[in-house]
Length: 109
Length: 204
Image (cartoon, rainbow over all chains, first blue to last red; front, side, top):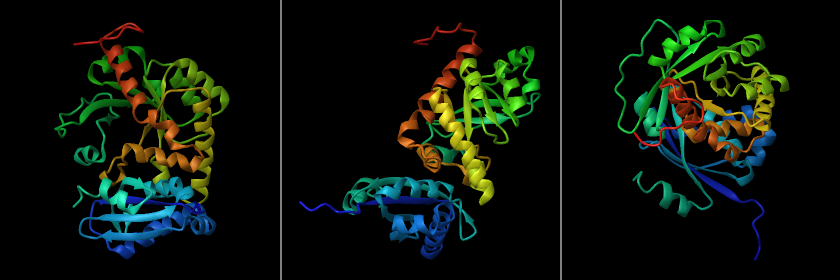
């Protein structure tokens, strides 16, 4: 069976503290990652914002599985998005979107 | 702030007082969240007579150190916990003395949130060195967010994710946010009620 060279991990996040726009959230995540690990690190991480519900403040981000600890460290340092003070809580991590949604986002609605 | 802490998954939080003359105020904590009080002293304040008085009012007595000299001084006192007020690199001999003293060490991760650039690199270098020594000598460590504002709170498991920045696998240090803080409270409670070392209350 062929093996995927780049496994991905999907993170479910919840923003506590206020409503922010999708673009603002994404640029903050990329900025903090870039600040910590530079352009080389960012290129290896392959970050993607899969979805973001602005009303509920719930987002799904995908990342290369090797860069997952670095992304989690970067997210834990992110305290401000678009001038609003927020806390980013990682609800869970999964290897598939289907599993992530069923396990961590079911109760979120 | 306590409600957010409960929402983030904390079961116990310690609130800090820095004035020895103050008494811990009454707080209404959300259901399921235990609040304990702690006092932070300077090493020169931690005299045995004062500690005996403070132990009746506070669960945890900590000493803040802003230099190696203060750190060594704090290790000679009877406080439960020592922490670095201003981060400095710990060396092997500091870690050995800390290990022999039997005190808990608090890793304060708040500065990571507020600095960047060269300062951040310097702090990470200090932290990398300290964490390596703490793990090598198996020193009981308590990781703290040191939050004074709601947005500075970090979920317990997310606190450990900072350790990825110093090349430590966070999974190997889960005890620093669960078992070690619980053990610290157990030790402090024993000291407060005057139980000798090694004696435990199994049921109340």
